Length: 425
Image 1 (tube, rainbow, N blue to C red):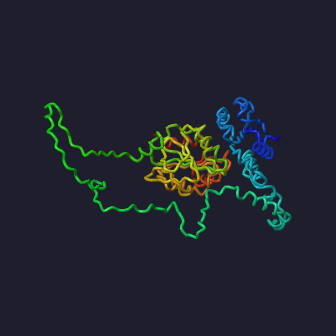
Image 2: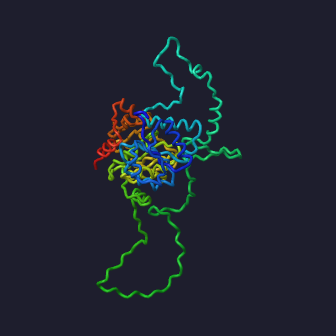
Image 3: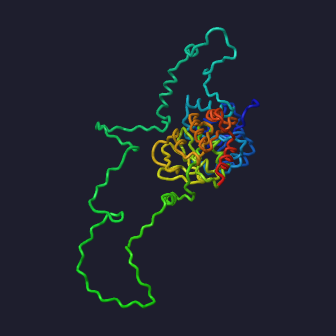
């Protein structure tokens, strides 16, 4: 073992997923100091192994057991990598090799994820023109790779795009949820009275003879006439809060946490250090290959000081709450307030739609560098924008672009402190 070898604990139930992850760790040159079913060991066993990295194969059967390892999983000195057991078990051939290369890059702190032969050694240049790609791969046989790619093509995630089937009848009609409007309600010719439709009164019946009521005592209050209808209007925000069961307040603005590959660990550290009374909602947009955002919610709520929820269409974002954004929920901003609706998430325009002075943006590992411009524009209008420090960041492309433009970068724990101080109330 070399001095740079990482000590890794593999927590996974026995089966194909564990075997695949073990092979990937060996290929990455890791030292496996513990490999066991998390349902069969306790926190002391994991702590005694002194791992530098914990790799967890997530599945429903182990979720209740993970809380016993909180002391290690919450240790800032320990990197935690979560992988879906179902996805790990299915990886074969090219996909398994690709995942192993990314795992090796994360363990060893570099960004080299190219397969062997994908790089050119220029350390000892020779006279003459460099070799062309055609020359480098002159004897490479591409057919096996094409056959393998064809075999897994239909199992790969579609990136949020969905196919719409066209009716076989040849009709050109299609349903667009963004432009659809309900048909107009049938109009009535009845006049309106105080905002309500006046309903014709039924024909009066023959009056029945009544006797005069006895006189009221002088001390009795005189009866008052009422219309029989009383209306009380409530704030739409109060009604929405009651319907969602949330106790937080509806406020303008939000904190956006963007992340991608290598991002779950950074998001976990930010949420662990946020104060429980943060005045704004926190929106987490993290790209996942498997799309299992419900599992991400469970992971984050174990460490977060704030309630962590999966954003759902029809709800409003409340302060002091964290909302994980799935790909099929769109964020609408109405007068500065976050509303969740149905549709494809548009992260490229999300920053610009927020009220800048009441909002913040954190670009964590794996964020899209294209979001830097919008983040800086938000900061110029009084908002808060920062990125994850490149040290210890798996994919710092966005953070480096932000720093190059004069933006702030810091470790995840420091970002949480800076974010909380931006909204002291």
